[in-house]
Image (cartoon, rainbow, N blue to C red):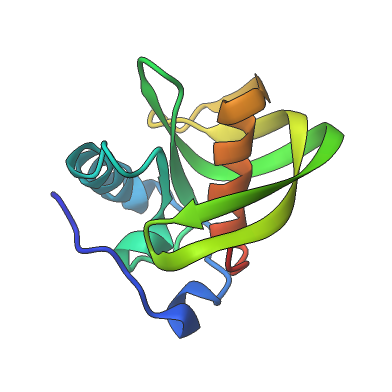
Length: 136
């Protein structure tokens, strides 16, 4: 289901709770909502649709990957950049890493490990910041 975009910075600034199997619908709602905002958005976190759970979706070019309880295990190549966000007005400076390795649970609740670099790594880091209540 397409959900409205959360813009309340007090809500967005709160840490998200771990996702459970009962939150699988959140992943579907993120897919639907990202598809509806495809021209202006490349990733989302559950708090952007008003749900305080550690669930994100990242556009990887041809596909979107939903990640439950993602954790960065490795990172390298720090750089400074500016990012915008569908939930916030304007752009903000931040530090990102060129290469990351992320572990997460997929929609079948199986542990996955993925190495990301460049744009996909930046999107993933932005969405994971949302889960931690970091406003970027």
